[in-house]
Image (cartoon, rainbow, N blue to C red; front, side):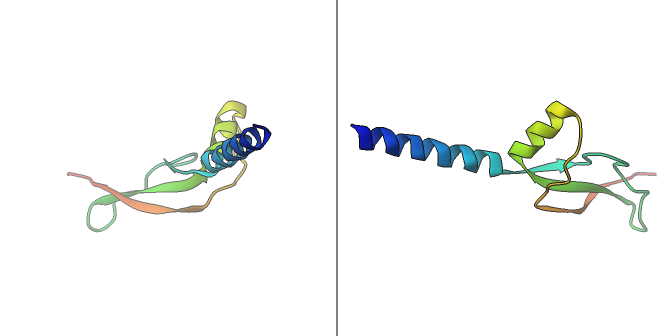
Amino acid sequence: MNKVKLALIGVAVVLLIALFAWPVKFACPRGPCTTAPDADGYVHRYYEVEPLGPAIIEKIIGTNFGIYYSSGVQKGERVRS
């Protein structure tokens, strides 16, 4: 029974770490959200892909750690004029 309990605790710890490392995409986490329309009429939005754990802590504390997997600019919707 002791080995089973230890194995279950190990699986729970691994799942918790995986949950906190799960990537989540945040569009415009801070700063200006969109650019001016480009030549084709599309606006672009900045995004970051962050781990879930630090993202939750950032929301609670209200600060940014600067920890992210990737970032970039995605093409948004077309602006009609």
